[in-house]
Length: 153
Image (cartoon, rainbow, N blue to C red; front, side, top):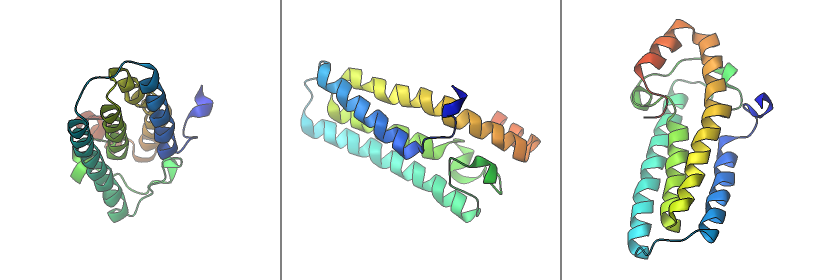
């Protein structure tokens, strides 16, 4: 299934898994949770995801390296400070948190399958190929960075 590596833009992948999450929530039992509590929890998690993702984008921009996830081989620098000192993939973590917020809003425990499926997909078809490219580009520096900073959190 290597043909899927680095092919679909992660925001589009997120939308696809968001639709899957919604679909699952329509056929699975829902929790009897107050809407205001669901909305509040979803907004907090979504805001955290947005902040984490934006911190990653800003770090890449400041380093003057590519933010294009489909062309990791065009990276010009290894960013390891700021949010990248906490997670190697803040943009994907932000997207995952957005999906988790969506699942919480939908109030179906089965809807959490969407974020889990996204996590599996994005790790296999986006992150692992990016890591291969980073290893090729930055060698030992990326290997040492990977040993210190977790892929997700």
